[in-house]
Length: 131
Image (cartoon, rainbow, N blue to C red; front, side):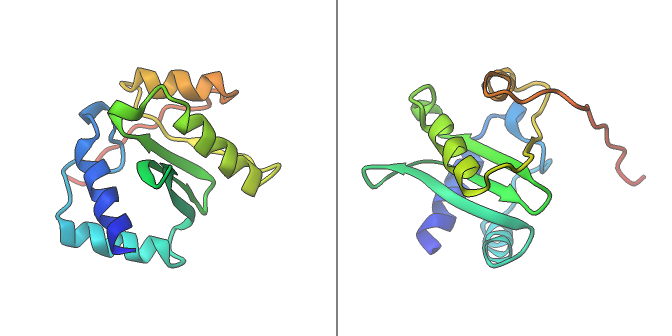
């Protein structure tokens, strides 16, 4: 599990700014480890796995208990079918389930990917942080 957590931290650091909607600044490794251990062991995530091929990590996908999908494939691995494969695995594990994909409006490639798989825009959410 520690190797997975390190890989997930690598993925998180490599995300472009327009792909992040869950945090405003990069967590420390310690914060990340705590978050992963909590969510990999019955926390807020129902499923979470590393997308791999031939033993090499390509990205990750998760499903929250609220049916929200988080999917990120390493930039140099995008366009090779790994995201589609991961989504199909998740759909097969949870047949008939309604899925939600929270995507930054600035992340055009991710929007196009999910629309291309039949997802429909249902809302834009705005945030006001405590002042």
